[in-house]
Image (cartoon, rainbow, N blue to C red; front, side, top):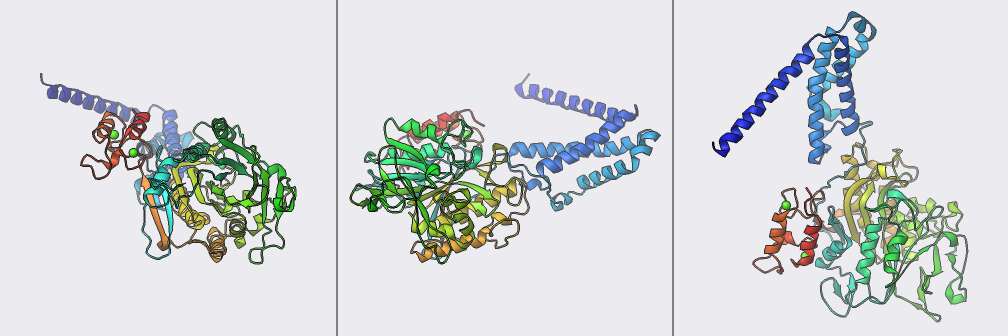
Length: 579
Ligand SMILES: [Ca+2]
Ligand SMILES: [Ca+2]
């Protein structure tokens, strides 16, 4: 007997079994064995309907992952079977049952049947209650070329495992933004690079919120790793800082990372024995008013510039502090060496992307709230009330403008205000996994693009119809406590542009470089939904090549460094067996 014949026999046997089961199933449904079964079927139909409506919403095109599509198909199938069955069950039920619940239940069942039967109706239903933020979603992120100049560049890496700082730096490097400042020219390095070997790099994180409300510590770890891996050798210093205002913590027991016990302090401790890396929380010094080092005042505290800014009304306040290694930092003026300020302070602005009940969206700009000292939290400034006027722009240009902004969008809060699930508070169950990291030297373009293409899209996928409060193109302030995001973003842009920086909210003025890989199956370079020997074989075949070599295969270069080598194979091997 041939193999083919055997499998044919097996298939036929399976089909017979299925048919038999079907007959039994129908027999059970249609047999009039009493009202209990009928009531159960009715209940099943109703519960199924509710489940589908509440769990997945009514727009099944939103369901992007294969397993979710399968779940929806199953639930629709269950309804198709159970609701007509339940109707039959209802009419076959006892007189007493009909008398008691007949009218209401019949209406529910008929409504349910109508929904299932008329498929277009699925897409016209409101989605109240159809929200499920706690999932991993696949975003569609498209690159674009600017058509109007000058333009801003936005760099985007997306995909589980691929959204790493090293891949982001490689993407930036390919498109001309060099991370490392060096006399030597090479990949990611050159005289125009951002970070010099002896810089003091201040990484401004969000330490205010636990769980998914704070900056992802895996991203922080990768960033510190990248800085200390400066090709000329890193002899500078890194300080991770924030003013958490009222509840900041560098050591949250519930952090934002793959391993939720990995706090900011834990990450810093991984490096501090070999490099000068420390944390500084500005929270305890936020009420201490001091003067600049140049006046002889050596105390840690905040400075307040008087009068308030005539355009935005903000009192600019900024910290001045000594790190664990004795380095004296003025956030505005730089590193105090005892005689003068050295201009080797570089700020990397590292916010987590999330919705905000007052101002729609927290990204690079709103995140600067944690640089100043907030009056409502007992501090010296009034930034919170000036966001709507563009006050964060004043803070950007009058304190220290970030060398680079990197948005952590690994997990985001995509629940739009005024939804009760919206940020800034973001417990694990309210976050959506989007697997993205985005960077730009233009915080306005970055925030615009991240909100429009990551946050709005994620909100729509998880079940929201009305996303206007997250939309940078919307000037409708309904739904937020403060000002519409689209309004204050443009006001902030004006402040930044007037100070001489490149900033735009016009997508025609943006080059967007996107590196996307399947977020579900990292390492699956041949795109067959599993990471296995075939992927390793492809990598082995192209091993040792770079672009131009006939054996070069761009799929193999997972870390985007223009080389197919051991780093790529290690990446694939790390995710071996995933599907
Ligand atoms: Ca594969
Ligand atoms: Ca590579």
